[in-house]
Length: 169
Image (cartoon, rainbow, N blue to C red; front, side):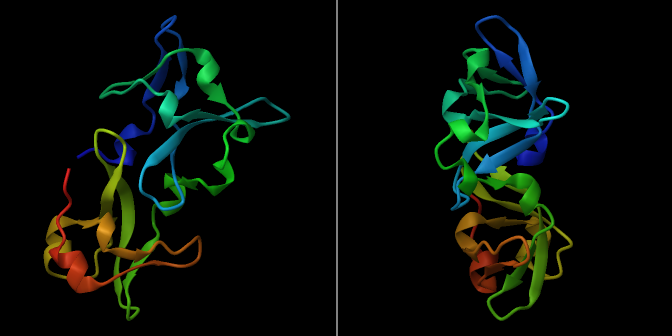
């Protein structure tokens, strides 16, 4: 299954005129980390930097080589997207620690695994401290995460559940 890391730097192209609108700089998720809700194309402007986003609902194709949108007017600022202040950036998840409910270090998040419809299925892992199935798979299913933590708090999981759950497409 594809990961968010594989989406970074892919071009976003308008199908109406073939114009390249930018490259994906980051992928944004809903607050429950269940699906991709937008991609960030970075910022424009020299003095007054304005973030540029494309809502996932406006994307026609999340392709292997590029993402296709109907026209350039789908590129908007976050203030034009309802709820954008609640979006969670993939960049903020990378390196987040995952611990057991008891506080034992398990691993850190490397990337987010998504399916063909951009629904989150799980996370690839780096710095895996646990041995067993997670160390072999180097991935954990979304359903095994009991808390997503925050910028300074780790994600938590029940280790037995994390080891037994497979990531399904």
